[in-house]
Length: 223
Image 1 (cartoon, rainbow, N blue to C red):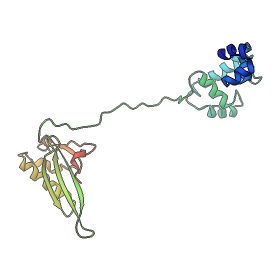
Image 2 (cartoon, rainbow, N blue to C red):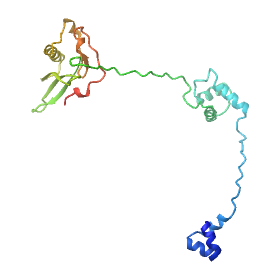
Image 3 (cartoon, rainbow, N blue to C red):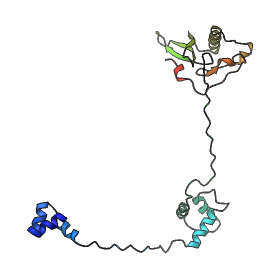
Image 4 (cartoon, rainbow, N blue to C red):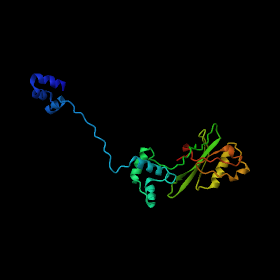
């Protein structure tokens, strides 16, 4: 606009605006002093709650009877008692102004539990095993691949292909794998019932106990 004003003093406003491709209305408007914007006075609705009514409503919402109830339920209960303070929406606005527009009940916070995990620092400390269903050459014929994997070395300590999936076959495979790795399988292991995909400590076999794992090792599943 300063360039347009300087050029208009020499060639005129119309020619200056046409040469600089500036609207004359915009040029004239820029030369006028800005008008002071007067702030509009705040208007208060005649139905707005007074300070005393706001304090009374908040005291009712904070009372022991209604401290854990929603404004809609509070309003309904007050109407049954023959009282009306304000609408539920107004109660929500009052609570929002106090920073209380959220779940007002005491919520149970669950502590963070660490997922159970078995760690191995050497071979033959923790094994993981799984059963994979394989399709046979004949239709509707399937085979079951039993695999026992050492999670430290990823070494397959035992495997077997069978035509069915039974606990006895799995027990036999684990027994043979323990014998190959010189791990004692005591008579107290009759109650040892690991599930496919479980990780278990081989040191617990002598005591007849197993440590169950929540999820199977991803690398232990062969497909």
